[in-house]
Length: 147
Image (cartoon, rainbow, N blue to C red; front, side, top):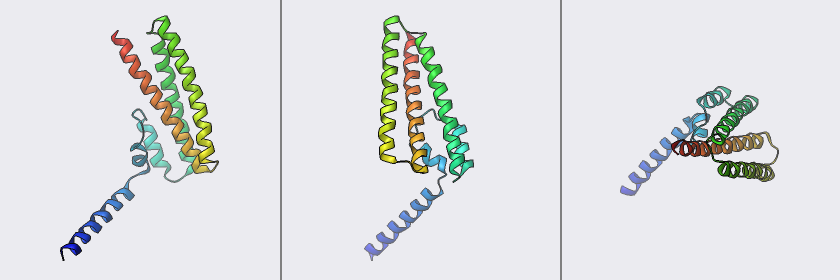
């Protein structure tokens, strides 16, 4: 009898958990593995888009542009705070990061393929990497401001 009760409770918890996961919005699912810095506008856009892949692609493209702009602004601000030697090191690091970004995109493209959903995933991955790089440069800018 105890085994039956334990099994029933386990199944009830599983069913509740599955329904809770199913109730998550698309933005909540993305947010659960997104880096800090992705804008609220993106999450709102994705929820409004629902399952419209063209609208989702537009949301991703707009957010990628915002993240790229954030990266560029942070990069320029950081350059303005560094010594000549540190500037050169940052410029080299940024060039290498761009090469990595390109090579990683080629690799991911070979894995994901050319399906519409795959293209959305590739764009999201690239957007996340840009956001992560902007976050890293933002951290370096804080350190540079303290010196």
